[in-house]
Every structure is written in C-alpha cells, then in structure tokens.
Length: 422
Image (cartoon, rainbow, N blue to C red):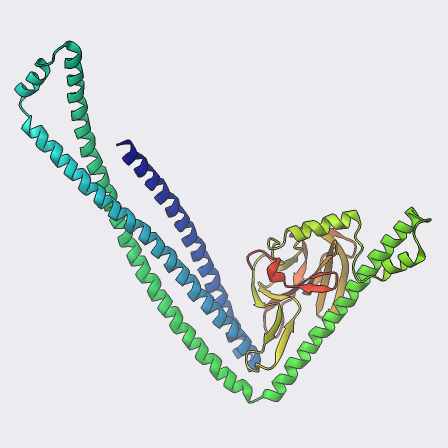
C-alpha cells in the first residue's frame, strides 16, 4: 500500500507541475498572439494611410512585406499553442489510462474482499474466531485484525470513489481541450488563408513596382548612400571619442610617470583605434559585455522592422540593402532610452530632421538615431532605461522608427545578440 500511495503522490505532483507550466506557456503564447495581432492592425492602418495619401508602391510593398512576416509569426504562435495543448492532452490521457487501470484493480480487490467478507459474514463465526483463541493476547490481536480489515474495506471503497471522481475530472478536461484544439486548428487555417491573400496583394504590388524599376532603384540607392554617409559621420565621431579618451589617458599616465613614459608611447596611445581603458572604463566594459543577450530594448515596446546586416531588396533580389544596426518601429511619441549605464559622448544633428545620441560604455558605443528631440547633453552620465529623447515620427509614412547600433570601438555588432528577447 505504501508504495502505491507514494507513486500516486509523485504522479499527482508531476501532473500539477506540468499543468502549471503548460498554463503559463499558453498564457505567454496568447499574449504574444495579441501583440502580433496589434502589429498586424497597425500595418493595416499604415497601408490605408499610404493608399489614402497616394504614396509610392515601394512604401506599400515594404509595409505589405512586414505584414506578411507578422502573419507568419501569428501562424507559428498558433502552432506552438497547438503543440503545448497536444502535450497537455497527452499527459491527461496518460493519467486517464493510469486511473482506469488503478480503478479496475481496486474494484477487483474490493470485489474479492466483499466475497470473502460475505462467506464469513456470520456473527457466530466471528465470535467463534475470537473465542477459539488460545489466550487473551491472541484474542486481542484477532479483534484488532477484524477492526483493521473493516477499516481497510472502508478505505478501499473511499479510494474507488475518489479515483472515479478524479477520472471524471480528467475526462472533462480532455473534452474541453479537444474543443480548444479544434478552435486553434480553425484559427490556424484562417490565418493561412489570410496569409495567402496577403501574398496575392504582394504579388500585385511587385508587378506594379517593376514598371518603375529605374526610378525605384535610383531612390533606393540614394537612400542607401544617405545611410552610408550617416554611418561614416558616426564612425568619425566614434574615432574622435576614442582619440579624446586616449589623449586624456596618455596625459594622465605621462604626468603620473614622467620619467618612464616616452613620447613614442604617448603618441601610440593617442593614435590608437581602440580605447585604452582606465580601470573604471574596463569595469564598465566588462559589465556591459556580461549583460550580452539581456540588455533592455532602446524603446519600451515595438518590433524590428529592419534587421541587422545585408538584406536583399523584396523585389530586386540583386540589390542589397545594408543596415549597420536594427530599425525598431514603435508608437508615436515614444521615448528612446539608454540600454545601459554610461556617458553621453556626442549629441549629433545627422540631418535637419534626424538627431542622434551616442553613449559610451567602456570601449562599447550605443547610438540612437532618428530622434526629434534630445533630453541629454554631452558629458551627462545616464543610467539603464533612462530616457534620452523622443523618437521622430515620419510625416510621409506616419511611422515612428528608431535606428539603434552597437559597436565595440569602431566595429559594429548585431544588436539582436545583445538585446533581450530579440
């Protein structure tokens, strides 16, 4: 009996733990679905806005592509929900099968016990069983045995009743889960049909866009050149920040050790393309590096609308679109925020409508572009998640997009490997 009870407790605890985990997974996936649906609605609003203003089909295609990607994410999220539900149903079915076997065994044991009890049901035979004892001790033990036997019968009956109720509960659960699974499968089918419609719209846009190929390619190249010019500006500013920091360090070292520091050493320090870190700067850089993959997003909420690196153009596959960071689409009026503590080394005016802030974290630099206003100044110390300015909303597209870059000295890094949940 003790082994059976221990197994029952273990299975109950395991089932409860799994149930809690699956519930949490379902809740998270449901929240993610809601976020994706909000993003899809935002894309629909942007498409309507673009169409109403009769903007170029290039912009329509870009938004359409983003919408298709969101639909694909929605399908994957629904599939994950179905998988979690299938796993949960599998565990519940195992419990149902186990309970059926245990109930069958309990009923067999109970029937056998009742039969034996029936055969020896006579009060006279019970009395004779006691009176035939050789001594008082034996009579006492027999009386205790009869009492325990009756108690065990009652416990067996209660256990059968308990397991029957438990089995009924699991059957109800799996019934509800089957309905939920059917609902998810229908949702998934509906999402796939919607995705197919979006792809048809995309194809129509692509056919339309190819008619004005020369003009579009020229526009893309012009924008890419603007991006490269901005990247070059930022690179110069980073180099200038490195040079200024190294000059300061070299001067401090020379003052501290005037006899042992040569002019050549001082010159080498000042002209290095990497920051010569002070102990304080090294600690900050180490802390920044230790948080790789856990840094908060540079905006409170949003989604990546253009990832890092070289991306093929959605229509002209031979045309490569380069991105030195990530572009994150967020809400109108959103604040840009520092992803880690550090010092503002530059506030830039990249164009008449594009302000940027550069923050140093040891030998790492983070840059926040496309700000309409800035709330920090050069030399300010900032903390993690501190607001540094407002992200600009494009008057033509109605989109609010922050471009965010991370570099170690002058080498760009992919922000996706640094930011949490990207």
